[in-house]
Amino acid sequence: RFYDVGIEEEHAVTFSAGLAAGGMKPFCNIYSSFSQRAYDQIIHDVALQNLPVTLCLDRAGLVGEDGATHHGMFALAAYRPVPNTIISAPKDEVELKLLLYTSLHHATGPFIIRYPRGTGEGADWKSAKFEELPVGKAEVLAEGDTVALVCIGPCTYRAMEAAAAFPGRVGVYNFRFLKPLDEETLAGIAGAYRHIITVEDGAVKGGLFGAVSEFTAAGCYGVGVTPAGVPDAFVPHGRQDTQRRNAGIDRAGIEAAISIILKKES
Image (cartoon, rainbow, N blue to C red; front, side):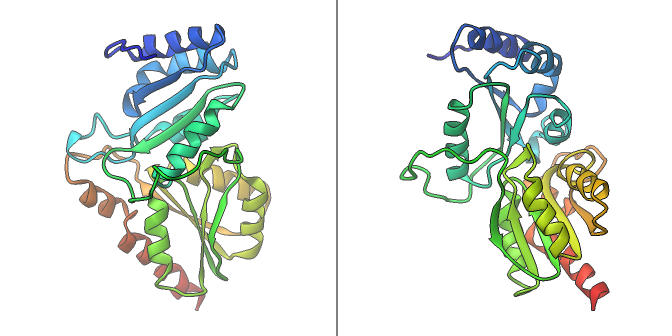
């Protein structure tokens, strides 16, 4: 069953909360940027009551020609402090399918899934079997000895491409979930590497960079943490590839960040 409530983000969230309170499992679909209008409803009507609403935040990250009003830059940082929330971002179409399935079987609280505008990575989602992903568990994609790329979202693929230029030196980790953070895996990374680069298609202030920095500082790990993400500025209109290049989250930008660190380590 589908309900079109129009451009009424606040009502969409409260309506979803009512459906959840009545025993249903609603999927509330909103542009990432416009979910900001429903911030109060997400906190008070869903999270505070621990209701099982899946919030599907479309157009996350940099959206290109839609411009500054539409960039989904802030969701990771904005919702991370809210209790009872799960915050996830798939790296490709298959993970999006599996996260939707996982959220359907999650019993309580808002389950946030943020995904970008545009084409995906070409992953074969149609034939992928439905299976639940372990909530709050990262995926190890590559291991190295000096720099760890801690990633969330589709820029994980760009990180893999960049790491390939430094065989054996760079590890790549797909965290999938910003909250709950996989602290066990992150502790292993902080103990094994000399430097971490966080890679995210969102604001670095408060997002994945914030979460990783807080964790490593609290644990006194002594590992350096460098952000690759959207800087503290509103991003104007432009092509998505240009915006990502300017933010340093394309392959070349991540590769350059790795090179700087490795030169210092040599």
